[in-house]
Length: 327
Ligand code: ZN
View (cartoon, rainbow, N blue to C red):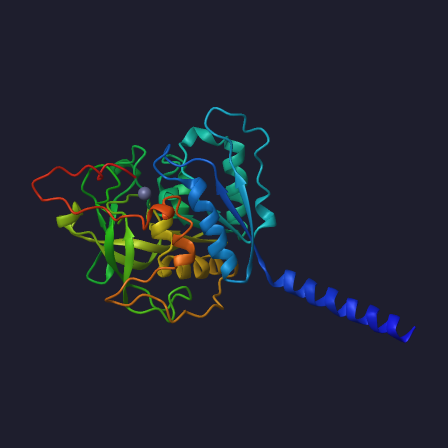
């Protein structure tokens, strides 16, 4: 009997521990299913995003895959409110989501939801007003000056460049320096002032209504078909009571394995869900002179068995730029 009582007590303790452990976890929903045709391999990147979030030890991560173009969306009703944060690894045109679906997401965000957008998610929905207010800026899908000004970082401030033109450009995938512009935001606390990001597309000339706080920028070098400006790369916004973390980086698995993406994704997701960051910055974080990437994540690249995903080769300046129009 005594042993039985002990067993029950142990079981109760275990249940209690399990319950509190589960309660402490933040529920995350990754949405995918489409991203600029085959250009962004979301089937390869979503498992990496999921593993990176789970690696933080504070998230429970679900994935919901939206139907493809032309399919029936009537059963696609994400239960937004079950989640502390929604991670969008998704890029689709305006007409893909019904007004009711868009409305449900707006209500979730207004009521205090969390959103993280990764890379080409800021290409999505060019004419969905609330979406563009959430992300602050976006690119491609026909965006131009009508979407809003091109926002750049100049003399310590976010400045609106109102010159007309198409939104969205990037150069070849090469490593580049990221500079912190708001060291006080919880996501950025403890990060070095400047670090090197693994080879990736450096998004530039993004346009939109603005309203975001810029956490970090990168210089878009004209030598790599850039704008010659410091361009926002990590941003936060508020939408009603909701919080948004906008990350322009993360073109592919190789880029996503860069330790700065892993860390800012984990911290940004926690902040979007709770307004706080409890995670420590790892000693492996890149420095001003060195890139740093996680081989356990880069090995998830579909091309990993062939060796490391090669970065884009630098072309002589006289040759045309084939990649600049891609997303
Ligand atoms: Zn891309």
